[in-house]
Amino acid sequence: MRTVHTLKELRAIVRSYRDQGKRVGLVPTMGSLHDGHLALVRRALEAADVVVTSIFVNPMQFGAGEDLDSYPRTLTDDQRKLGAEGNTLLFAPPVSEVYPDGLAHQTRIVVPEVSDGHCGASRPGHFEGVATVVAMLFNMVQPDIAVFGEKDFQQLAVIRKMVRDLFLPVDVIGMPTVREEDGLAMSSRNGYLTEAERQQAPALYRVLSRTGDALTAGSDDFAGLEAAAREILTSEGFRPDYFNIVNSLTLKPASPGDRQITILAAAFLGTTRLIDNLSIER
Ligand code: AMP
Image 1: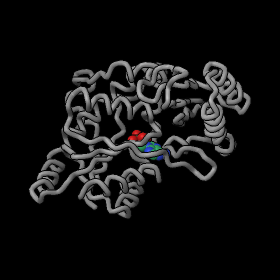
Image 2: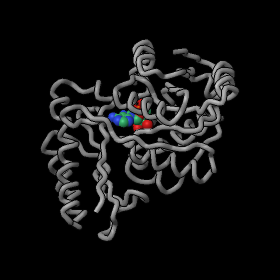
Image 3: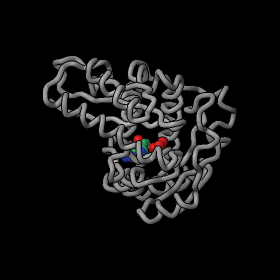
Image 4: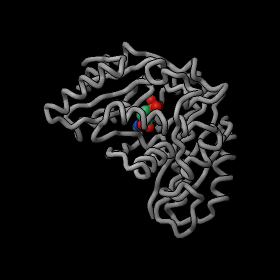
């Protein structure tokens, strides 16, 4: 598997794929790869002939005081894992390659409505950073398909809307969340957890599952379920950020008639912010 760090090299290689009539897939990541990321690569290899995985810790999507500097960077390990999956090309640009004029001078993409609330409320500017870098990666790689995880449910909704609104010629594929055996959603940030916190962490998925069961059984007491979940999370040692029962398509508060419902949750364990979600149909 080849690794390239510049747009010029990337473009030359992608052009040769195109000349050979190959379908190109893209898996954007921030690296520190785990089995969740590798599931996306495998899915992309089913839908495309060649797969470009990008690793870029995007400064535009981090707020002041967030973990941009401490975010794990493990390129050698990541290269080994991608090579074993049959990934075709790794694109790992430095910040200067993506934002040559600096962040302050960068054109940005705002995706209204679905970016509001949930992580958008807790992390102002986050989805603007995500949408902008994903649009740039789409233009750099010009993939036929791109695969994203449902783990970041609101992010996936933002990207789908951006692609629709801007008529971007990319098929977006969503992949179910890959979990540890105890239910904890895999995340590059799980490595921040202390041993004790790691033991507490699966409670987030347990509370999501319990709430999902109540919804599947027909409960419409959304506010009551949200409050109860926040209370349990607090008693399990979390500091809940949000726990919201929403319509899966609009991400607005769920109504009793909604068939597709998603529970979106974010909570801190110590200084680590975990997010997860669960979708049900009824
Ligand atoms: P990240 O490197 O955290 O920015 O994630 C890159 C991509 O991997 C995004 O599309 C995420 O939604 C996806 N992803 C992260 N964790 C998981 C997981 N546990 N299962 C499935 N996809 C994931």
